[in-house]
Amino acid sequence: MARKYPVLTDELASFIREQKIFFTATAPSAADGRVNLSPKGYDTLRIFDPSTVGYLDYPGSGNKTALHLAENGRLTMMFCSFAERPLLLRLYGRGEVLERGGEKFRELGPAFGERFGPWVRQIILLHIEEVLTSCGEGVPFFTYQGEREDLHRWAVDLEEKGKLEEYVASHT
Image 1 (cartoon, rainbow, N blue to C red):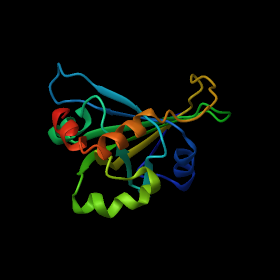
Image 2: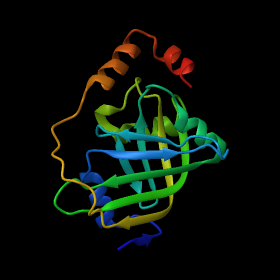
Image 3: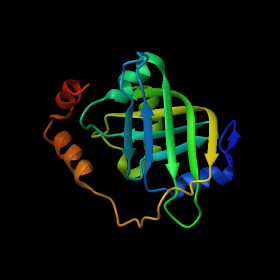
């Protein structure tokens, strides 16, 4: 049974903290634009308050999330349980891009611990407007085996070689 909430409850926040993967989705305003759906891992998500979450965004193939957020601000995050207790949790709201070097980026960055560093492209915040849960009974069981560290090592290496800014600028 689906349930709606205006903000995260303590129980839902606890569920989010237990997840090893989450998904983000944005889309341009144009009807013929493609939805950008991305899996996110590592320990890069933080809950700042019941209506605000954020994650570290590493450089990668492109930056559609930031482009779509600049255009219309719409952002959805989804969390799903692959363990015993089935649950799907979607967060709907307005996304905000905190660019490297900005005051809010520097202010919130330390909350992410060791994953935060000069290799991070940006922080994406979600200002929650609605929380929706549903049963999740259709999600199969999976066992977490660990993180793939390649992206993190690649980004750190790029930063150490002084090439991160160039890469980010060419993939936006």
